[in-house]
Amino acid sequence: MNLSTYKNNIIITDKLVIKNYSDRENFLNEVRAFELLKGSKFLPRIVEIKDMTIIFEKISREKFINNPKELNELFLDEIAGFISELYSIKSEKNGYLSNLSDKCNPEFLLDKLKCRLSEIVTLSDNDKESCLNYFINSKKNSEWQSSTSLLHYDLKPTNIILVRNGLKVIDFDKASFGDVEMDIAKFFWRTLRFNGVLQEKFINKLKISVDINKINIYIFFYTA
Image (cartoon, rainbow, N blue to C red; front, top):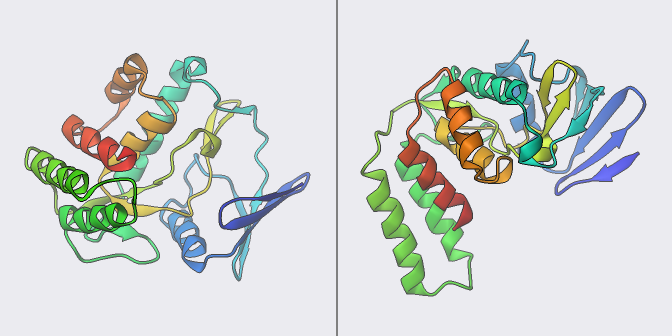
């Protein structure tokens, strides 16, 4: 089977998944994430890495996630364990693993938001200014640490595979360093679909403390 994604070409055989990257930064993000998470039970096994290609052992999967209502306690336990594992890997820098920045996290994010808003033609200048002010005022109510955590940065249903005894997470080509709340916000939005009951259960299962206000800031940041 041959699949094409946004920047990658993927060949799936009986035993292997061969991922060919058209973007070198995406390739480096994935390679470096696997180096940092070496030995993690949540990752598929890498068979070989060569120029712009990673060959993975094919996961014998049960299914992708299609509906938040299908998620059980085991899934929430596993994804909470995965997030907690990412959080334990720290850095003093921000951004994609292939291109880390020395800027502090709020400054880095503000620059990114400005860049993003400049590309949106459907918003007026006043609307864009309101977005920036919302972010600036909201972040004043949160505590921003100097160190950042490893992030998957694309926690959506097609990247979380349910297997017999837990789950595997794939596609680390956007792996970054930032606030753990960034990953949680994307997980709430794209996988849990803002299901309040599941969100509360998930937060209670985490082995770390998180800032709910920051999660809401990032949800705004992603969905603005």
